[in-house]
Length: 255
Length: 235
Image (tube, one colour):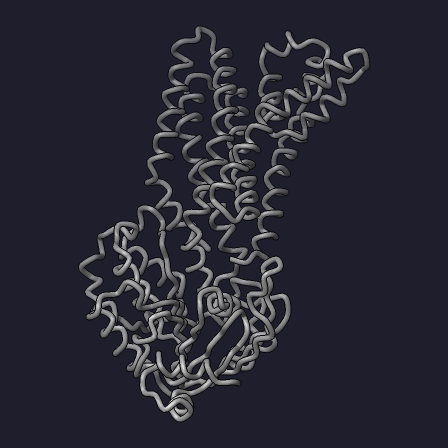
């Protein structure tokens, strides 16, 4: 398995999309720190930017990559290699390259300009988030037999996680504003890895004070060691569950 | 050497394979032919474990291959590849495949040399023409000296000279304890290479016969004619 990961990772590192992505993140991070007077504002700006960008790129790039690698996967699978190994190698290679890209592009300048726990938490969240969306992308790719359908599905998923879910949640909150729904809202954010990461990071900043009663409940939960650990575990399960679905489907799939 | 027992495979409602039973001994060169969509590729893919069957069993050297992967050590597969990793060059591909097959120490570089692949070593795989890709695929399939060689349309896109090189290599490669299975549309390429013909139609086995028996039945000498005649007959 190590061999497959090695060759695919080296190949992916030369991909211009990944290089541009890294450069873009790097420049954006520098830009935010140069333009915003307060570091905290820069961190929040970066949070918003990467929450839009990272899920989208992870999804679309991974799904395209899977389809481009399809023939090559068949060649690998004609060797004495187990199926699970081959798809896991694919996932791992994507994960390694995205993690490197995010660590260099976002993490490095972030930690240099603002060497506090919020920065590390932001980096951790974004890394986990890309792991989540690569996993979701593979799952979508394994389920669809056609590249354009796969990319369509990944765009739909992105719209759902980044826009639609929040809209539905806001609608619900607005309609049930009379009731004590704060704890339920907390629970609902667990259902969306993007929101979960957003709130995890926001709650470490002063912005939390502006978020009313829900904000207070959130702050109570996410500023404790226990709450943070639970949130990270939830994000990890957002990686593991789609990945398991993808692997199981891939094991039985007709290639 | 390989045996298919009552294979059934459906894609939705479409029956890709229907009760295909077939047993092929070693030491043969077998042509697997049939019209488009007759189940040739499905048969080969099911043997490689790339397609899961609805029912039936497949044996390689008396052992069932379903859900196994180790038996593929003995198989050389030449697929039709249209895309490789973007930046991988020819040399890297050969290095990569060799690193996947640490069990093999003794390589067959014959085709690699005859197709002059060394000259292309630094070229990116995706920049190669279709014919060059076929050559690379063929050299790779033979590299590990497999006992069973599966060739999917090996001659499609090859120039006449390379075609002859491949053919003479295959004739050389065929031996008592090896088996070669070739799918092809171009029957003339298979003349004086194959010993047996497996004919599939609509996912069913139409016939499995040796060339001698076909010749005797049809009184023809060319493969194309033999098969055309044979299809006219019943059973």
